[in-house]
Length: 199
Ligand SMILES: CC(C)(COP(=O)(O)OP(=O)(O)OC[C@H]1O[C@@H](n2cnc3c(N)ncnc32)[C@H](O)[C@@H]1O)[C@@H](O)C(=O)NCCC(=O)NCCS
Ligand SMILES: Nc1ncnc2c1ncn2[C@@H]1O[C@H](COP(=O)(O)OP(=O)(O)OP(=O)(O)O)[C@@H](O)[C@H]1O
Image (cartoon, rainbow, N blue to C red; front, top):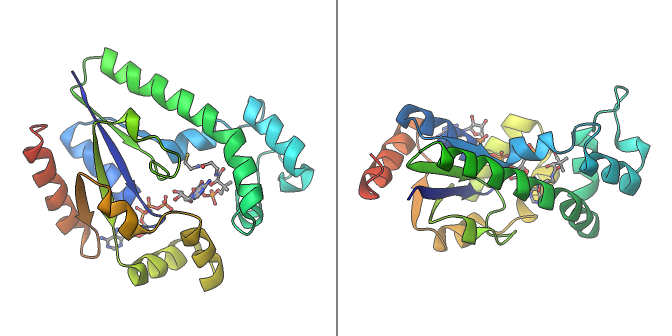
């Protein structure tokens, strides 16, 4: 039986950073943000539904989604975010499970599902163990602004559209504190995987 690990955290907590570290241990990762990008390519059913719901003004000239624009609409309006979630989440879920099962059928003994909204979308039953990547809110805000160039208000809107990091950490089987260096986080991950007999 493969061990399925759910990797989560809040926006800019360092999930993608930790996610990349699994490569070193040859553990495959299915990334929900990446899958969420694939299911909205022009031609996909979710893409058509989004254009019907939000109009042509959320498209760029080449007809792909203007993600920054759509983000600024939905993160400022809870109802619109729920509409977007209702369109994208079923498609994301289906494709993630297909990828997970392909890895299992391939004989992998551990597979990671990197899902930012693991708790919010009630997907915890898809995984056996949960790792939460945690940071203090001041560090989170700074890294988010540095990475994406948001204003403080834009960054806070995005942070507030999710459960708090602290709330998530309380629900985890293991927590990686990512306030320090990436090396320190790597060492915490290695320790967790050893404790779970994955390494
Ligand atoms: C609103 C969109 C277009 C903004 O795109 P953008 O490229 O700016 O951000 P990106 O997709 O890289 O997401 C960055 C982070 O925002 C947070 N986030 C994304 N979607 C959501 C959401 N629906 N609710 C709360 N937080 C979210 C996550 O922490 C994510 O890691 C995009 O996030 C989207 O399509 N979201 C709906 C699909 C979804 O829920 N994806 C999350 C994983 S299933
Ligand atoms: N330990 C660290 N020290 C310094 N910078 C870091 C550390 N961990 C992550 N970062 C930086 O902080 C930013 C956020 O990290 P990352 O993109 O991994 O977060 P995330 O949780 O995947 O975010 P999102 O939910 O938005 O996808 C990135 O620019 C990353 O390089």
